[in-house]
Image 1 (cartoon, rainbow, N blue to C red):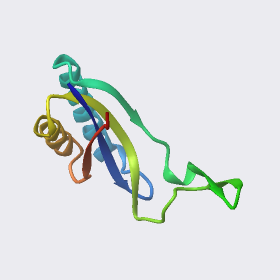
Image 2: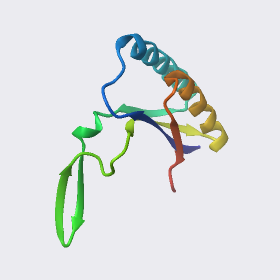
Image 3: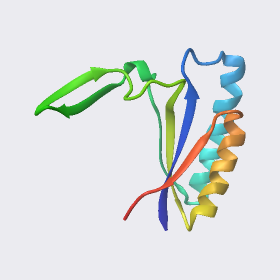
Length: 114
């Protein structure tokens, strides 16, 4: 089985209130249980807000750390799920189900190399 990362992008700013976030989290938790039951789930994680990120890079022989995400944008990675799937189409089906669970947030699907 190949491994894929399903990356969830969310808009910058404050998260939605509990009336919106509650049902989303319920649906995501139910989907994760389905993935576990199917043997597809490997690992999931939610990330802290992008403004709490740091970027470390080498520039002119010196390693520098800066606050915030690498690029300016209107959305950032909010969380991810790593799954096992037979092929891209099977991974896309899990991503479709995740997209339904989180409503309007996009889900990127990428296969791990190697």
